[in-house]
Length: 270
Image (cartoon, rainbow, N blue to C red):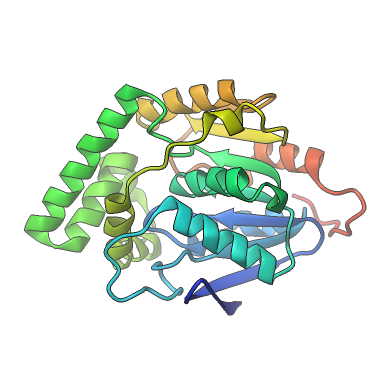
């Protein structure tokens, strides 16, 4: 558990295991804590690096922190990989972290060996999804305007996970989300990215896209479009909500297929 200063901010990160680097990029309002016990399973496959993105939990939050972008977070991820001599890595991106991972491979292709996108929030890929996202952002900003940043954070997660999913979050993760309310608002105000479809149609790297059967339908719709754009991309649908298990069987199988066979790794695979 360490800290590294990149791009003007101090980023908290953890390393587990050895072998092929695996970089985990979390979604909006969360942190490295969201990976939970999945880190141990991933570390059985390779050198797993999980970090808190700028503005989140144990990483530095710029002051003021009113606006950020997918590109800024991708630059942070690239700098982290470079400083840790961890490129090329298999990059696992969750939700907004999936947007960041995709932007990373577009702009820093040599830093990425393969991609695992856990319901990436590329909501600009269809007009319907983009409209749904716009309504979501409006609701969150309205809640934050009337009840403060934490009310906006709770509104965001209730929309994404559903009321039951929000209530079922462990206390530690619910506290994490509320504490990261300023980061949530900064990311939403920064807007979504629009992938370069020309680059994606020429992307010749292994890509796994995982969608949840119980998430809002716009997520699955854009995942289908994304899978069609990227040559050879595999699209899987799993049970459960938006917080997909990063060490589920389909993900672990993909990792096993695309690890560097020359790199050492632990034998305690789960």
